[in-house]
Amino acid sequence: MYRSNSTSGTILSTVFMLMALSYSSIVFSAGLFDDLLETAIDNISKEVINSIDKKSTYTPKEVKATKTTVNKAPAKSNVSQAKRKRPNEEHHDWVSYKDWSTSIATFKMQGKWTTICSLSTGALGNKGINIEIPWGSIAPTTMPEVVYFETVQANQSTIFKHKQEVEWRIYSKRDDYSFQTHAFAGIDSSGNHYVDSKILNNLDAKKSLQLLRAFAKGNTLALSDRYSGVELHTASLSGFSAAYLKAADWCDFSADSVLKVAPSSTYVQMVEQ
Image (cartoon, rainbow, N blue to C red; front, top):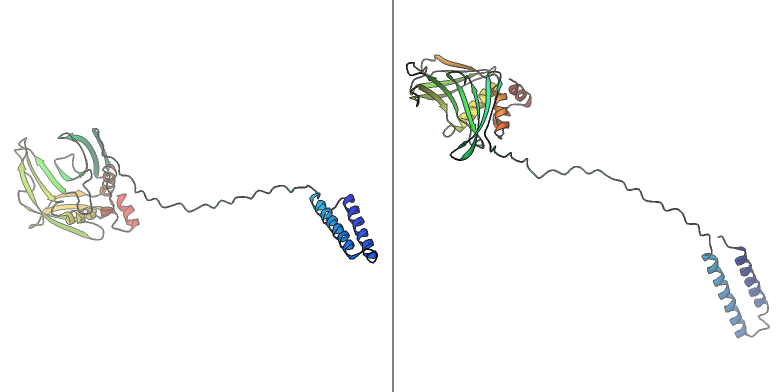
């Protein structure tokens, strides 16, 4: 323990005094000797305390603790992806994917904004396949209707006749799919004759879904007379999946129920058709 020289001398003097008192204890009375001894011990205690207080004033530098930061795993978001707002201004757009095209139209109807996405093949001619998907109409239990249409002038005849039974057959690399429906004919406001054959969404939601899935997997669609088997219309399905995916993007619905029914590798191939 470190002490100053003066403190050491004082303590040694006190110790010698105690020795002398001890030697002389026979001369002093017992009470006097006890008082002197108590005084000497008290002096020694004070010197020791003063010695401790006068220690070196060196204070070690403060060592700051280093804070260790541990990156926490990001918390899972409990906010679902926000739905896009329905467009509220007139807008039209169109894009093609091989033999199919997708269009979007926003317009006012009876004072309310309406947005419709359409997929079609052969729509630029007088016959083809058309699928209309109004904004917000796709749900697990509802699917769009798929329509074969044809229009001719008043002095011409349509290929399909009124109430004719029609077979829709989709040819693919692995399997063929077939669906049956009817054709319905009429005359429009311009006097032109038209006919359509529909896979309805209100009565045949499951059939409509199965048909769209078959479109995604297939190569060619053929419509024929159910009884004779004669093919009366054919259409390529190349580009359908990409067109459907674009419609889903534009009209804010999920394409999974139609396009993700196969393994992911097959799904990618379908989208790139």
